[in-house]
Amino acid sequence: MASEEHAAEGATQYIVHHLTPLSVGEGFWMLHLDTLFISAVLGALFIWVFKNAAEKATTGVPGTGQAFVEMMIEFVDQQVKDTFHGRSELIAPLGLTIFVWVFMWNFMDLFPVDILPAIAGMMGMEYMRVVPSTDL
Image 1 (cartoon, rainbow, N blue to C red):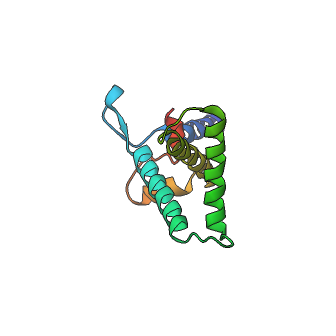
Image 2: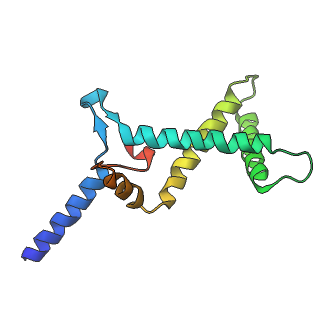
């Protein structure tokens, strides 16, 4: 009986630990620092990948990075053309940004859930959530 209570407490503690964000403030003005940090890192990664692909772009046979970026751009461009029939210089880049952002959020689920929080724990951070969409 005592071991069952200890196991339940351990599971509850584990879940609460993974659902508690690293935050500052209270109520509506609470800032989730882990979400802001991970989002900034993913944004920088997005800019770096697309910048490198643009710099290394060739008119001949594309490399794997260029082909991946072109595939994403063409996919989003086709979606915009199918759904938005007006003329706007903002819609396609905004659609690409949102698509890549959500793709990268979902890609973060491929990392084991405890690795990055364990690294953050070594640096003194008690709580850290990796996937930014858990705030929604």
